Image (tube, rainbow, N blue to C red; front, side, top):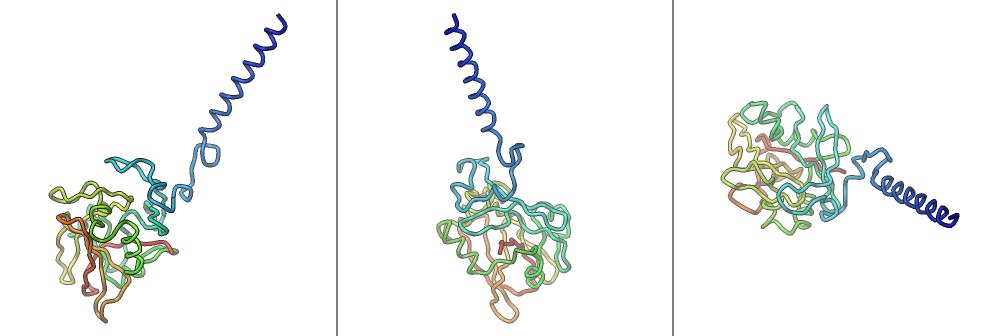
Length: 230
C-alpha cells in the first residue's frame, strides 16, 4: 500500500511539473505575452514570414511611430523598409486629388526636395543603389512588381503576390501643373539619386506589368515615398 501511495504521489507531481512547463513555454517576449517590435523583424524573408506565400499570409512586421502615426516596417535581406507609404503632412506635399481619404489609403505625394527631408530621424529616402540591392535580393526587376505589389488595390486584377510584405500600392502621381493621374494604375516612388540639375530618379510599378523600372522626371512632380532605415 505504501508503495502504491508513493508511486501515485510521484505521478501527480510529474504531471503538475509537465503542465507547468507547457504553460510557461507558451508565453513569449517579456513573460507577459507581449513582444517588442524589434523582435518581430528578421534578416531574411523566410523567417520574417509567419505564414506561407498563400493569400492572407502574415509577416513579422515591426513598427515605427512618426508624427502621431504608426507605420509598419519590414526586413528584406539586410535592409529595413517602411511597409507603407509615408503620410507625413509636410509643406509641398499633397493628397491625390486633394482628397484626404487618398492620403489615408496611399500616403501623401511629395516633390523631390520635400521627399528628401521628410523621413523620420534614423531613416532616409533610398538611393538607386539601395533600391537595387532589394531588387537583386528578391530576384530581379523582371518580377519585382509582381512580388512587391499588394494582393489587392490595383486596377484590372493587376495585384501582386506581396511575397516580402512590402505591400506596394498604386498611389498615382501629381504633376507640377497641379493635375493628378494614374491612381489605381501605377505606383511611383522617389529615390534620392539625381538625374540632372533639375531631375531625379523614381521607381515605377504598373497594374499591367510584373516588372519594375527606373524613370527620370522633373523634381517638382509629386510621387510617393518609402523610407529605409539607416
